[in-house]
Image (tube, rainbow over all chains, first blue to last red):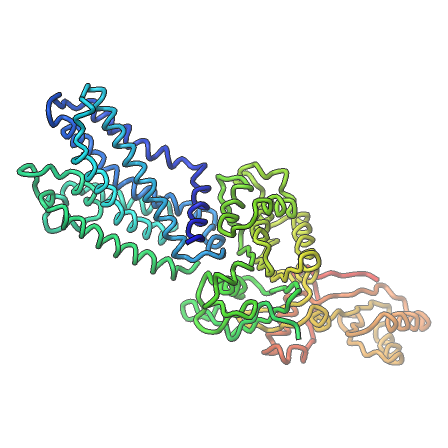
Length: 246
Length: 328
């Protein structure tokens, strides 16, 4: 446990001087623009309406992309400077190292999600919505669920990022699979198992007759799929990383 | 018997059918600077990567500090500092931050960073980002990283590769200090015999994944041997004079070539030759180059019989190993 925290603190130094936080800011800024331009009426349910409008870009495009970028980022410096040799010659288990990198990715995604909430609130205030009417019982599960639904993708992308020494290759892969998101999400059969669509499926369920395709699935079964695929990708990544010749 | 810091038994690694490392038995005693010598592609780096657990051997055993590497990897690595091939670094960080990433994992006091930076002479440039460092500085930072945990065993793979002469000298002096000042055992690999000769106290030579020689440095020097070449006006007659003195040279391109001859013998021989009215043009010592040594050693099959045949060819200087010719 202690060594795991050490590894985590070591990761922090490497990211300290990097521009990773700037990347986490781009998403909320663009979503804020969408939110401010959106024509959401100022009446009951307007917070939820605003949230849904802003979520579209965030969950459909940015969250999967960020999961890929952050994963590639935490491996970038090891690939670039021959750092794998050095770091794996240190007295730290490969699993601890891998998990600390995954935790950094998860932490950055959580931070990204938090920023998103802040810009939703900001956009609402600009539109003159009443703060006391914020439907936390709608926001909270969507924000937390959306974050959790990113984790399988993060685990998958981290796996790919440790395999490929190029920084760009995992990102290209990620983009290629992110683009057909909206199509895949329409499929009840494949949608839930598609890691790139999972954040969107969890965050954009409107409830009732508005849901179509995989959006209509009950949240419980969706989360079981998310948890299962997270475990599969994590296990695959760990097994590979522990055997990786350096 | 001295304690072995590193011991391998039949260490083998195959890459696509060819044996990069073939049944290697390494034995490195405590307190030595062990020179791990071999041409490029001989399996030095592969061996070192196996010693650090970076790759898994196909078969064989690695013991470091008398413990099995497979079972006690983390415990062993805690006491080992290493630098494998080219140095690893985080370019966007400065030297202190680079060392800090390692320090946090090793969990040693913060002042160790200043200490190792001082040891390798990087204190002045500590706050510059490593991107702008010269290769020599990066190499020294790599050694600083290896020293950070206060290791008992230092494994350095080609630490002088690609450095200029002054950089090579600096690194060499740094390595030579380790056993004396800090009691560190050092494994240092190189493809240059002269390099190893100047710092190692014992030596292992690998070729095509096989250990072909492993002994102390003085023993290697004895085996490599130097030859004394004497060029003179009448070599045929000179041969007779030499035999009268109890020396049995061979004739090679108008020069008498002596093997295993000491200073006293040379002095007596030269004076006898002068007395016999020979004109002596030059007396020179020729060392075997690493290449010659390899040819002899691999040509005779195994390390056991390596000294059986030492008839070298022309003895002409070759590119490998900087052979030195000292006029006497």
